[in-house]
Image (cartoon, rainbow over all chains, first blue to last red; front, side, top):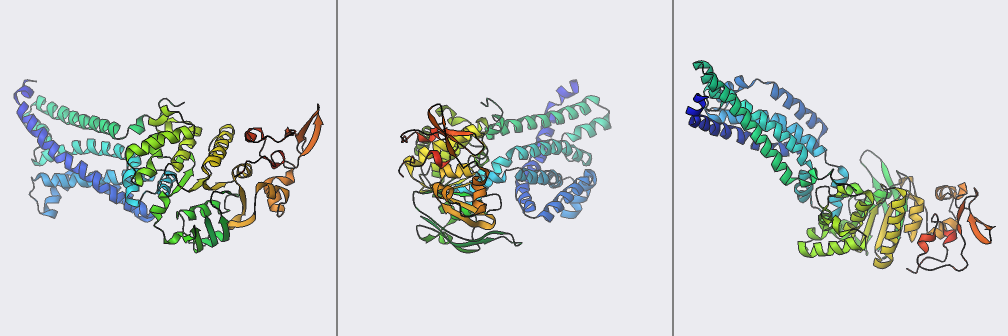
Length: 216
Length: 296
């Protein structure tokens, strides 16, 4: 415990670095998944292809990918950019099929009715289709967020600063408290992010929560 | 006025939804399109607001071909009511009703004020304004749908089986309300249904469709009942089953109207009462209502 108290600044620094590597993939995957999912849903064979590719993507072990990526894109081995790019790919593999399901979950009757009311195509997407896909999209983002935050730790093995460095360093130096701190901090970060996402969902989609209350 | 001129709709793959349909619908008239599934009734209605474009032929509004109109602007000028599932689940009752006026650029405040009036007109408790559709009963959702259809004060109201998803008692109530509204508002209504009783109740004229949008008969409910064009129509309106063949039996000093199965359908009153007649109608047959229709 005293190790933790003595090294709060180290833990805080790693937490910051951890977030800087985790948040861009989560945000990028969310934004990129929307057009990709729409595209996939426009053709049956494309959707099958996307689902299969996503499954295969996820089967690639993360450590070799982190090692291989600098060679492929010319970044430094210890650059956080490698981690961000690799994690964006993993996040997309999770997020695109979910977003595709999300858009398919929107009732065709509601979309038809929105068109009949006079929504132009773009307005219909932003004001009707996207919000109604929201609950499924949120479910996807929550999984992506937790998984990404946990995967960032793998970079620690390569010496890319993150909470993962605490395990690596703790194991090497035999400091159990340091290993524990790394696990607890990573889990806490994941849980906190998840809680924030849930709150965000409640604020943005009040209709989804009031659905089952006080029905006459 | 809405005109269909030799309209045909063929889908890719060869499905023929509508073969060759011609009909004129006068302004302020309520026309019910009735037929089984595959009769093309919904397809025909959706041609009016360009949700469907005909393969050949023309659809006109006041003489102007809709094919030349901007579809989005056209749709905003036409009221559209469908089953409850058509409400936007993520918007409150008030925001659902103001959808079209807001799309047309009316200020939110003005649109909301008008929406509250409309809620009153269609018989919705003002307390429901902030609810979401899923928090309403089926009948309330339908009323919201009607209010939304009327919100931009359109001349034309398209109704696609709007009361199909509610139970018979509520449906009867909603049909009565629609009749009342139509007496006041005198919109041009195109009403699609598979229920002949509903068609007779709502439509000034009824169009009975065969598969492929072929017209079996067009006429007022009275005309169709008095002279079904053929066996198809007779069967469709139930004339052949005896449900529409009514006769009078004298019971306890009153003239009771009885159908062919001997079931009482209503009582013949000495002098046909005007107004309020709708509530007296037992099953929408014209035998008990001839001459009672209010002037339109």
